[in-house]
Amino acid sequence: ETALDAYERRLKRMVSLADSLGAPIVLMTQPSIWRAGLSDTEKAQLWMGGVGEFRDIPGSIYYEPEALERGIDAYNKTLLNVCRKTTARCVDLAHAVPKTTEFFYDDEHFTDRGQQFVADAVTEGILPLLPRPKS
Picture 1: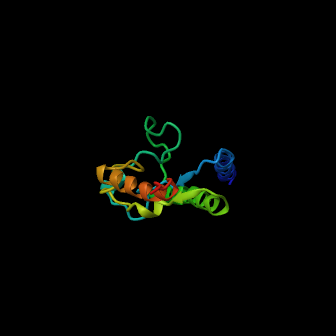
Picture 2 (picture 1 turned 60 degrees about the horizontal axis):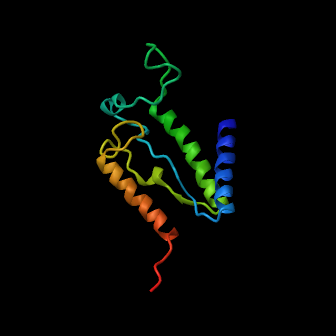
């Protein structure tokens, strides 16, 4: 909880700074492929869920995708709560991006299709913040 509390404080501070400058701010949740039921092939593409120097030390702790999903979900829920409580606009990419290798080539990095999907979602999220041209 300490890390989540610190994360929430930092998000609120960013929103406060943007507000003080009169600038809109858009926060986005972090999508990932982590989920229950990943195939062995999908699991072989993961590399971000280990502890310490896990890539260099055989037998190091590496979390299951379900545990990693619970962790990132806690951060994403914190961000969504900050959006609800502040003036920040939120783009919930974590719920929008399908958790498949069609969109991710590893834990959290996007394939070309995933990049286009995210670009479209972010565009949709920020368009309402742009000034309208005067006619």
